[in-house]
Image 1 (cartoon, rainbow, N blue to C red):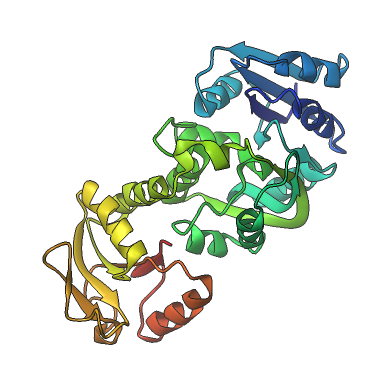
Image 2 (cartoon, helix red, strand yellow; image 1 turned 120 degrees about the vertical axis):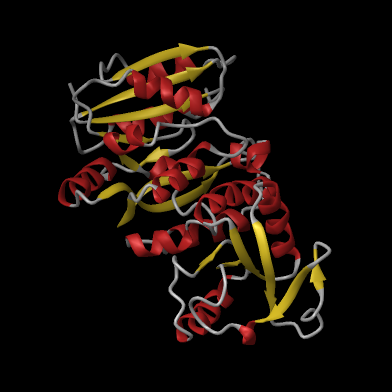
Length: 336
């Protein structure tokens, strides 16, 4: 019986699963079990995991026909011991740093208001050389989050948590219905559902995971990770927040978000822009483009959704809106 379960969905990762399993077994915290779900691998993933465990009974391997990561995760969760309180996520190509479980379990024990805790992430390229700047920039952004407020602010910008670096309260996961198999990634979908249900996220200030980047990584190859799909995901959940919005940015990102919002039957009241060449024009046939200077304060219109994907401008826009009395999360939010 264990308090913590490490759940690893694995598909054709024979070259890396051994290191991943070993990193889990080498934790300084001892009260855990590992559920590895082999999602129909056609290589030697199963054998490589067994070899790494060397008979350690804390590892259980489940095998199923290939059904995708969400199904594999739900299979793993369904096989947890009744004693498990926390679910620690891992992937078959990453490395769990030795003190991760000890740090995250202690944090959740001390902070019952937090449903998901993550931590700082290191990156490492394995295999052939690849372009890594985008990954590095994303990880720098991930690592800038610590408090629940910071996670709330970022929820619609990008997924602000690295899934294999998280430990989740089992009760919270069950309350939102576990993992869903959608057109987009299962982790961002889960964070959105938990966020809208009122659950809180936080991060410990220590490194907890080596996130290994390679050419075959799902985030680089799967259609669920395509840029337009993320606009569809955001629009799906924005529709649950407000049926009418104003979009700040009449340019590319604003138009992309508007297209996805229209498919969710969200009414776009107007576009807001600072470019005098755009102000006074229209988008999508009849939707007016208005100046940011026309904003008066709370109650002057529907939710403002800021689709500006330049990180350095966010503080400027936030300051402008808050100085007029708008409240972030109630009157405006960032979605790019």
